[in-house]
Image 1: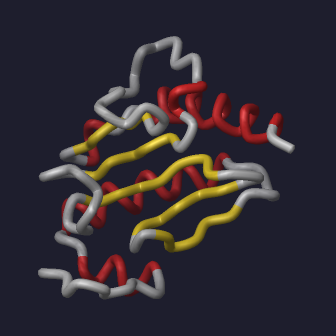
Image 2: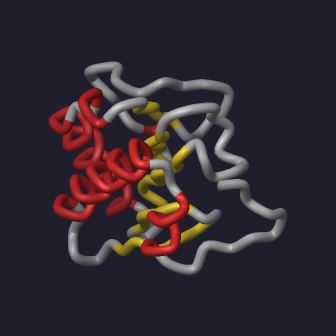
Length: 132
């Protein structure tokens, strides 16, 4: 589906309706991993037309390539808002040109490494707890 300039997605249901099947599956799997492992003080909202997870500050974002302004041509990006401050011992995240948001792009759901995401999510939550 082609997005008109200024179009605003208002719900997850609306987002899922607009995504191609493979992106929808990847987004759903990533969301479930994140939601099941974030502490109760954290929340999800639609921001920039994509799922955005925050605690005291931004924690991570799930950006399908079908949604404009994500900077990716295919797949789904899982970006950590303060990725530049994460240790990322496994060197799992790509650093790209953004100095703050580090990310991983998935082209299929089979590429998702849940344990690596859980390690990074735990680290990101600990960082988030340190913010005033």
